[in-house]
Image (cartoon, rainbow, N blue to C red; front, top):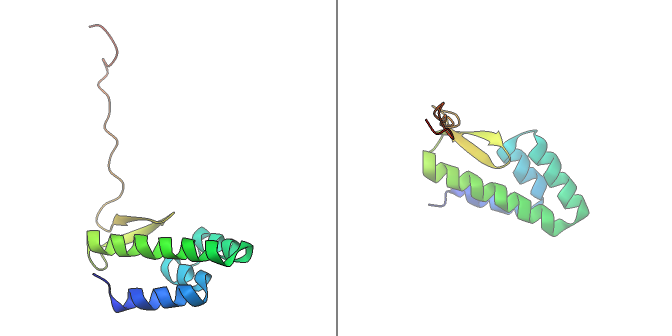
Length: 97
């Protein structure tokens, strides 16, 4: 479901893509990437900002309003948890015993 804040972000991204990236990610590497892409070409800056807006809307649908935290590179994790634990292989993996 599209919220009014998403519509405002899209309008800001159309006018100045780094501002939309700054609103979503704060002062982070993604903001610098958005600035660099906008300087290199206006369209790449738009694509990157729309990608960040899409990932933000996707996280909001998945985890609910305020139930997620931005970790960088367009990735969000739930507030209550972090990354899933990597399953450990049994100690006899690959042996013939």
